[in-house]
Every structure is written in C-alpha cells, then in structure tokens.
Image 1: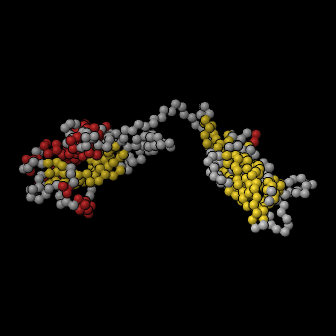
Image 2: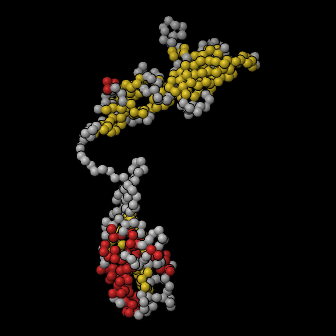
Image 3: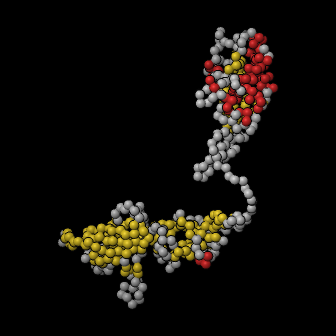
Length: 438
C-alpha cells in the first residue's frame, strides 16, 4: 500500500506523462513556444497578452472509493487495541486544460494530451517508478523537509493498479467549476483516476493462524424469570446470608449461573431445576435494589472453555439489611414543660453499608396509649468516607419511651420481627428490634 504522499505522486506521474508527450511529439516546435506542464489552480495561471503555452492538470475533487471504503474494518478491538490498518481508498478527479495565444494551438495541445492519457489507461508499476525516480517532476524541494522525495510514496507497490478514464462533465457542471475557480475558461477535459490506497504503518495485533476447526451445535433455550423471593416465602424479606429462590421456565442448562450485578454465582446442581433455582446469597452484596439474570453457558473446544449462551431478561429484588441497635449517651432537656431526650444510637449492619449509600434511622413508638397516635421520628446518618458495618446516629428532641427501630439503606428497609408465640399478649405484633429512651 502507498502512504500519504500517494495523491501528490499520482499528480506527478500524470505531469511526467504529459511532459514526455510534449517532447516525443515536438509540440513546442508545432506551437512555436516552449510548453510548460503545471498542476496549479486555474486562478493562479496568467492569461491575456502575456499568456504562455501551457497544459495544466489540476486536481479538483477527491472522493472515497465505494468499492474499497469498507475493506479492513474494524480497525480497533473492544479494548481499543489496533487490529488492522484499513486503507484510505480515494478516487481523484482532474481537469486538464490548455492555455495558448495562437489559433488552433489549444486544440493541438489538448488533442495530444488526451491521446497520451488514452494510450495509458493504466499506470503500470514500471511507469510509476520511472516517473518518480530522482529527479522526479516534483521533488522533495517542493515539500516539507519531513516529507522528502515522492519516490517514498510506495505508489507502485499498492495492491490495485491505478486506472485513468475520461469523466463526462456537462456544460452546467463545467460552468460551475470555472465559476468556483474564479478563472477565465479554457478548453478542458476531466479525468477520473482510481483507485489510490493510502495505508498507515502503525503496529497491529496479529492473531495466530487457526490450528484446528471444530463445529458445535447447541439447542438454545431462553430462560425466563417469573418471580424472585426468599426461601421462607414470596412475601418474606430477602436478607444477606439468606437463600434466594428464583421461579421461572427453562432455567436448567448444562451450566447455569446467576448474575447479580457484576457477580456471577454458580448454584449447586441439586438446587437447579427447570422451574426453580435456590441460591445462597453471597455476603459481599450491599443492601438495596439488585438486578438478577439467569445465564446459560456452553462449553466449546477440546479444552472446555465456557462461553455465554442464552440469558434471561433482568429481574430485580430488594436486599434488606438486618440490624442490631443499642443506645448510649442519653441526655435530657425540658422544653415547654416536656422532657425531651437526646442520645446516640449505635446500629450494627449486615451486610456492610457503602460509603455512598444513604442511611436513614426510623423510630416508631411501641404500644402507645389509645388516646393518641404513636410518635415517630427519622434521623439521617452522618456522611462516611469508607464502607462500615457500624454507624453511630445522633437523635435529638424525642420523648421517652420504647421505640421500634428500622433503618433504610438506599430505600431498602430493615425488617421487623413479629411475635409468633400464640399465647403471648403481643402475638402477631412487631416486637423487635427496639430501644428504650429514658
């Protein structure tokens, strides 16, 4: 493949072909003037009484080549590493114009130039090397010092040969072109030069050749999650260290895994059936809303390598924290004849609480008198700079009494314990966890 000098090299080769045609056909003698071949914009060419005999081959348009534009993609892998150097494939459009002072000389120049390009419809590799070898029509003196001679473009080494074909331009298009040039019209003909392939030299990752080919066929069974709940019952709280039960269809596969957040868990084979999966929750999950998926994996290769197959849609469950509260540093003040208390409530959490999780302490009066509503309070936990399993929350301005304690962690509320003793006076009532403020 050629490099970024290829466009300039094509122009240089075309100039060289036209220079040779002028010499071979003695055109300078025929028109009675020295003929110059240029490749500059038409608006920079001097016209009028001082107009010189001149052929100008001007590159007026560059467009992507449709046949090559998708070759070699993608160029980067999923991790951003460079895999290939896809070629930049371009079609070049040139305008060949003749400038002279005498009658018929423009037609003569244009005729010989068109004959030359007609007889050279393909730029051969030898013709390119000969045109670009030192001294070439455009040398390194005309370019930045870091670019150097056009012979370094490697144009002759690109995969596809460069073809030259006349390009039809109607009178309206040619009028627009010369208006855009802001130059005086001269007899002209357009050419399409295709294709120039520019490729970088960046280092790429090259995979080893395939040593062995194998074909594997697996029936795909899409798992479906219908319900998620605790082992104790669908309406019971799901807590850390407890057993989660997943109900659904087509849950069983050769390898069934459960994805919770970024964690993949493999349940015991005896706990997986087509309609139900039982799973012991890992201790490192944090309280709050958790996303869950059933993932089927398939093994491929002589050395088994498990790849992700079918996946269920995501289901959500709330992991609720369990707490143990205690009271310390109780103080009291009198306000409007009422005794109000302040204290520190130390709450032990399972699982641990993340430093970015929002924690709110909720207090509800236990067994209030029948002539008024139960008192209730809420207090926000202080900001933390690390994950913790113990938080001290300051409470102020509450009246003394027994209070049920709950904590919300990112909206996941700790469960209350219900009295299940049929002979107890508090049967089927909330009894714990609680604190006494006096």
